[in-house]
Amino acid sequence: MNKQPYIVGIAGGSASGKTTIIRQLREIFQDDITLISHDYYYWAHDELPLEERAKLNYDHPKSFETSKLIDDLDQLKEGMAVDVPMYDFTRHTRKKESLHIEPKPVILVEGILILEDAELRKRLDLKVFVDTDADERLLRRIRRDTRERGRSVESILSQYISTVKPMHEEFVEPSKKYADIIIPRGGKNAPAVHMLVEYIHTMLRQ
Image (cartoon, rainbow, N blue to C red; front, side, top):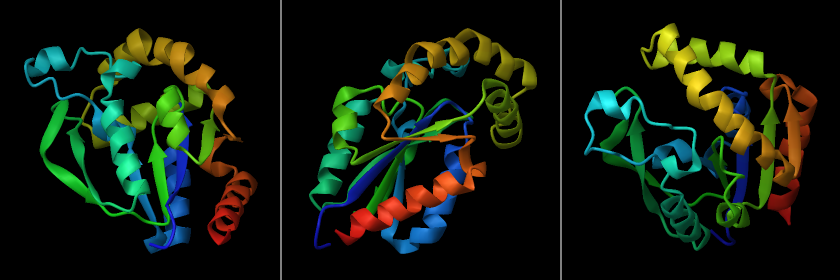
């Protein structure tokens, strides 16, 4: 690579539509883009049995090894490849294997809390917040977690009430003030996504 990667952070509440926007960006930029999720960096907590790991608060900033994400981004910025952890949401712990990531012209960093951490924000060249109504986010979360993670509706609602909603109000929503771009309604907002794409194209040409 002739110049440092352009790092785009995409934040927003759980099930706000971040994945839809990321999918569109990857289709457009193809081999010039790669993705790192903050969720990869959940602490393993292998010292706890599965039943106890399932009860942990996964929506608090301390749930993540954010310092390693920052180190990995620094290495990618310098043109070096990294091996990032992977997380198993069915077992609530890290997988044994890691994910090898090569530096690309555009690096997407996504997660509900990536704008909450000041040091992480410094690594993001562009900060995006996907803003979606709370009821819509809850419905999407129920569909996703029942289909992809094998969870019951009861467990999803219990977690939402006990941790997801209060953590969103305490940490995620306030972090919106750090965003350079706010996209209402998520991936359904075609004009906003188009503007984001054009802006990234412009920055890459500079």
